[in-house]
Length: 89
Image (cartoon, rainbow, N blue to C red; front, side, top):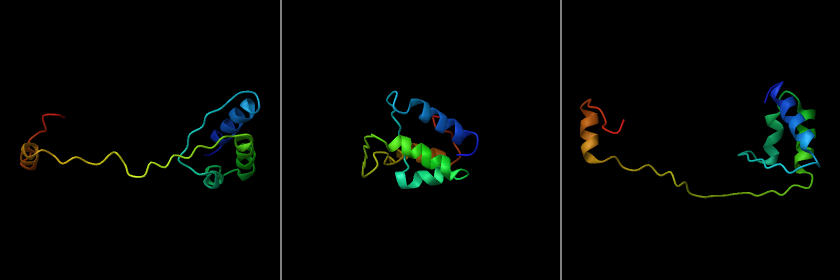
């Protein structure tokens, strides 16, 4: 995040801190959040401090992806290879 996004995010978290619940999802681990505040490490530390205080952390490790590519049907493969259009597009 860059200024002013990092300041806006901090203001949001600070405003909600100890007043109401906040649900936050991220693909970053706590150790990587400092990098998200690259331009203002002090602000990042303050924001993380508020987020981590009395927080519950749920880590989801799904393992294998359910988005396995499906093989293309034979009839579509030959039409597309010849420059034809896919009926589904």
